[in-house]
Image (cartoon, rainbow, N blue to C red; front, side, top):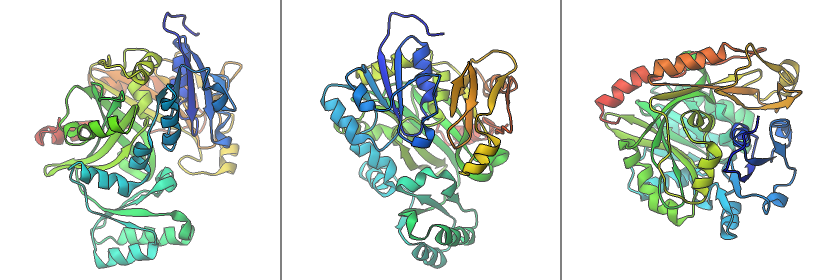
Length: 431
């Protein structure tokens, strides 16, 4: 049921793949008018029945009080709309480059006097193989540009001679050839992987800051292929040494380049220091949904205030927030036949009609039933909150047990990383 409230605005959400559905739906339920545009044709059924859809977002610009872009690559359009006086949440040409062009991102880190890990950029797999043979070590293969959207192509080597990396490079050469685009080999460093993120109002970072621990592998205990994300744990802080050493140094640059939105920097940290890996200069998925679970104010109102360039403190919950994706075949792979056979139009069943902490992903709503659609097999994100990580996990697991998704699978250990990682972070003085 849509609430009636004194704050009511018109929100236009422009989405690459429909990932922003949960935020758009929550904004609607808070009593705002919402329209959603999805660029990717196979994803266009996502959100049907949840929110009003539009086939041409440009025709809705004058209608909207706030325009929200959910992905990188729209920076030039965002700048154009801002110049016309529209309230926009989204990137700029500069922040698009930070995320999409890994070498540019690394150069900018150096320019801002932030230490980086050694890396080398390649366009040829053969050149990369020769390089590893001549410089044996453990490496990470990182695609750049559009290819980096295929998260399973990111490969983290574990062999100190680089033999596993050579094997994967040979496989990529056979399957991709020259269509892969440029990619990096980055020296692998052992430590804790941690992200620090913040909302930016066009002038400065808003507090509190968000600290996130991602769980990228398909199976518990970090086994299987990289999926981009199977779930995250997080908490909010007013101060962070990792933020001070990284994002904070970009504050004046982001203001100059007219950025208004959310930005995240992923790092490896250890006893020797903080090493930034990459930027996400947009909402993170599922980060934004789990963040919403930990924010005490309506998400629409929050986004409106950020777009209006207000300076304020975000009202957040104490303690921890966790979230796990429930996915279905063929996730994390693309296989149209398998998706249609096992997953398309499958119903999400709730044992009890409790939808608190349930975030719709690639779904449509027909006769009040939630059905799986799209083509990737991400059904839901289920979140939980609590004063301790264990409390947050317990709430999330209770909510998951209320849901039946045919052929659904999810990680049962989201948040477990915290128990070991926190000890290391305390001992290194990084919490």
